[in-house]
Length: 183
Image 1: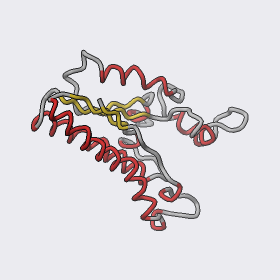
Image 2: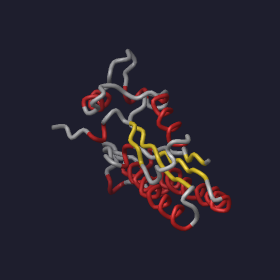
Image 3: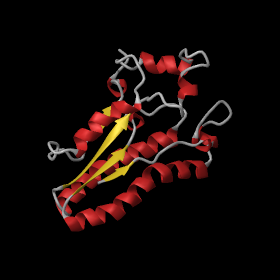
């Protein structure tokens, strides 16, 4: 089993008040694509070849709800995660048709999880929602941020016996954020 979980963004690939789309640093965008997509691609090549020789295996990629609903200010991250989702579907078909139907490739697409890494974006020093945090909650039908543990049951299901007929799936775990139209 391979879990491709590396990912992240960079300030050099983010728009803000001072840097619009036309001023984005190409090297920063490339670094974000390398981290999110190329890392997934290369690890899948290396471990996937072994799985093809064995005739079985499972690759689980970590995409993002940004693949379905790109967020403002982070075009490289959203695009790279969309590439991970598309690659997941492509590789699932390639492995099943050209190597073994017992090699499965799936992905999870987490939404907004409240972690130390992004707490400052979502909550202020008093633990109240920031403006951005409130916008996210307003568009999340379950009315809360996710917890990293919210990912576990879906991951365990995807890698456990009983999900052998699931391949090429990209499963959002985002409290309904990607499904919410706002209407």
